[in-house]
Length: 186
Image (cartoon, rainbow, N blue to C red; front, side, top):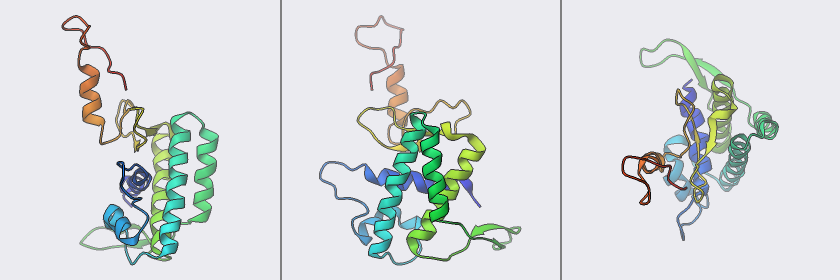
């Protein structure tokens, strides 16, 4: 089981809520959802799947937000509720000349399979790294979430803003003397 890929599904789903002005919800239609998450989904999406994915997106946003603000009890309570709602069914598989390893069984609806993987991925990530690794982008106008896998536990920005944020944090302000970098305002 690839822990990080399942956890990243939760990040991708939560970040479908962030839209450019005028863009429709990425989970409003099966085609839009397939465009946003298609490589993580197996099967034809139904209206129930879309509804379940929207619910799950809201829950992941709430979990990441609670974690980022230090409300551990709220984050864990929501995650435990999802673990009950979307139980995993692991199975041992061997393929492509690989040793036996664990996969999630392909049972249930498209959304249920996606949910089980994303929920267990986030749960195992928290178990391995800690709840403090779940974050929300530090740029005030951005609401994207991320998982901080850095060794220094210092990530502050989503993938879209990471390079720009790190560069701007080192850029001197116009009023600062040359050679003195000051953090950029977010």
